[in-house]
Length: 289
Image 1: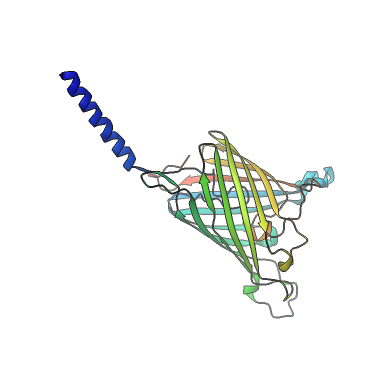
Image 2: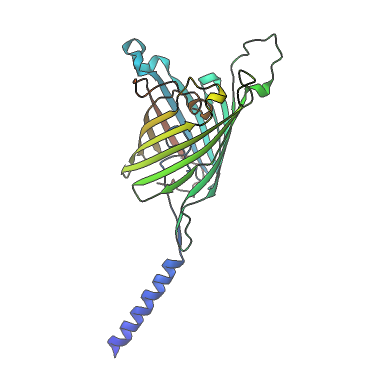
């Protein structure tokens, strides 16, 4: 009799636990290590109250050999700060040596991948950036407009974390340049980014990223190549180190998406790295692992 009542009670408890588990919705975490896969944005954001100080560096082509110290003598770099206003909204500013470019960005999380009672198969973000060319005007005798210095990025990264090891992403991309060389060139550049991550250990992963530009001949960029990069991420506490091999020396989207000069087939490649240092300004928040 007692055994029968215990069995019924246990069945009721199991049913209750299963019902509660079925009503839970779990957000998928850490699809990528940082806000970038390699060069391009991931769907990840800086959490509310956190500050990400980023140092990005790209050496010159390794084909320069020992004379150019295998690219070290021809490097470019960028320093940036990114801050999480909310868990779904971050902003950032940066300064790059290429064309003395200053930039600002906004990233908004529109959808988050979830499992459980409510399932969302993908994460979706919107990225908007403005780039300001800081070079001196080549011809000071003509009338030059500040707006001619500007270029814009609009991007919709869409990612899916397949399991604890694999993550994938596509990134429809639009870059608008206010000023082009000739009237026959299009101001708008359309591209598609494709990226992936394979997690090696708890703190390391291999990343791959490719950007294909569709209207290259109409934008005066036919002499350049599509950007392909391979990278390695390693996390140490509040730092993330990203080391990459890429055919683009550019760091900003209006450079690496549009003007990758290197070729993988000929070994005309660039070594680079990103260093991300996270500061938790809100003591109640913990850095997402």
